[in-house]
Length: 270
Image (cartoon, rainbow, N blue to C red; front, side):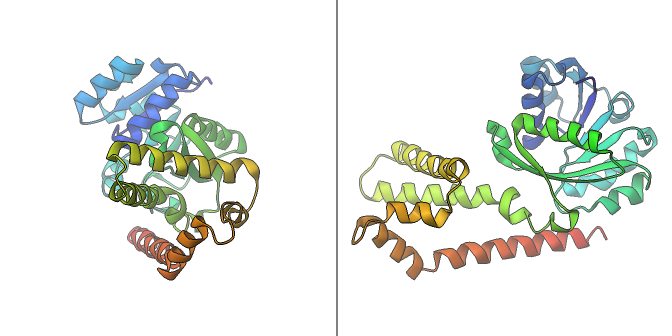
């Protein structure tokens, strides 16, 4: 891919994205410019994957075709103000900040700018991320280019912007629920006498394998659940207990609260 990318921010998500893109060879590592206030992170990235370190944020933007804004939502306005003079209508601005609508970016950098709003998640750290994307003033070819970049660390799909806050609970925040589930299963295993490290490993593998079955078999999750539940068996006893304790309702309620918060954040930028 004959493009130059600038990353503004190299925190946990940015670091994972930069490393994955550089290692994929979809873009030469020297064509990846990175700016971050943390010079130690930049030095580490330079040593690991040989990216180019930008001396300042304006330099990064001026020398890139695609600018990826990988900063926290509370820093977006400040960074946009700093880079808007360097951002022309040929560059593509990509943001990973949760909850901020495209119209907010346009209000600062201009309505003619090419903008892609994305929502990745932390499994990008291990190459299994799920990113949702929407865009304005971007051609289909340009959108596919950005999609290929995000596919370096997982899967990516396009979604109507009006659903971006609603999907936060399903992809961006959901790893936290899964980690809690793994931890709870491991705690129960430890209570039964299974060593802690082994318990975590076994629980994580069970979740990984189960997710893979949903993705690769095409079967409904309920059907796969029924396959495990023998009549009068151990699994149906566990399922019965989960139902008594409103397991499904707890998950649905948690996701509704997550969505409410995402919408609340979005209203701050109306």
